[in-house]
Length: 431
Image (cartoon, rainbow, N blue to C red; front, side):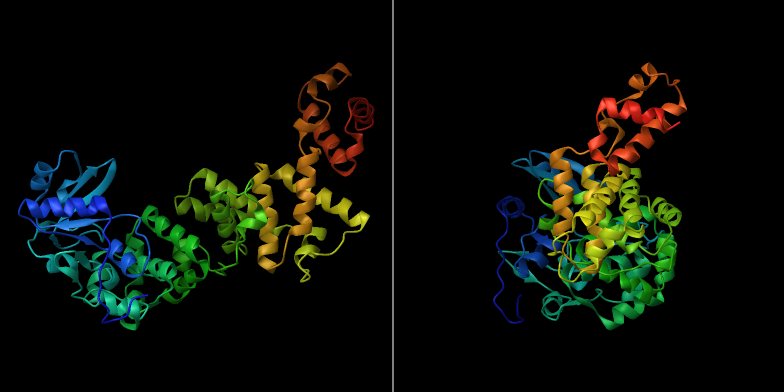
């Protein structure tokens, strides 16, 4: 973490430095701006290197061999250097915002301070190059040192230009672990109704980042009075449970399932049909909804042995009795049966242990044993199929599916019966 008064020098990535130097060689000025300056000052590696310049878009295009007019109307040209894209944007001033997203007009400027003055938060309103050093007109360094999220200038103006900045403040707070400045937070509360003018697609992107960073920061939504509007429920649980990737295992880990697990837990007290409705409203994909609901079902359904293990604060180090292990296998197989895939089933089981802050090692040992031995938990694994049933006198149709499902029920509890001859005999006693 930087300290006010330190000698500040940033190591600019070579491609960004090449672009800045080239612009200077052609009579212009240029700086790295925004998040890359903030992250560099905090000792973090920036993901992107955005550049601001007093060169006009057509001048940038004439200087560099390969460019893409990605946002030419708003002054942004993408410069491609050594197969890496860099956004180069002309200094600008934004006119009046009509829809809390787009300014009526954009005026290009020759002044870096004017360009920085239109940005959202002080920690994002800094610029740097090796010639001039750090440009920090609005106190970004001070606010980083104080771990504070604060608007540039009048927060009421900032949040009426773009109300999404209200949620972005929460996102940056969750990402950096910073508090929100008192005046900024008061303005967020005062202007929170403006969120209703922002598309759910844009809201979704910010919420996903908050969930990824630290779910507990969503509790600010309650303070802002926007939880019910955004999630269509006031029963959300915004606890940040500690996810242990190693507990899942590398061969089972999928980032999309980690996110589904976290979503399922924040929707824990919400009924399934409301979860689906809420996620559709927030423009989640059908796959995201399916995965989240799959974990949500297991989290809310009663499984005696799994629940007892997850309630154990001996962290699951106990030895299972023979009957306990058999019952646990049955519960796990039923979860595997209902899940859309094996990996999702493991994440669903883990949700119960995350909530209780306990260790799933015994449960996962049995889970892994089921998978490794290829024990039956789906119709496709039965040593019998519809064709064989028809050959043994069953009529084609819905009856076949019902019989196979009932056979699977029996085999899940009695795995030794998963052989063709035994299943044929058993099928004749089902109807």
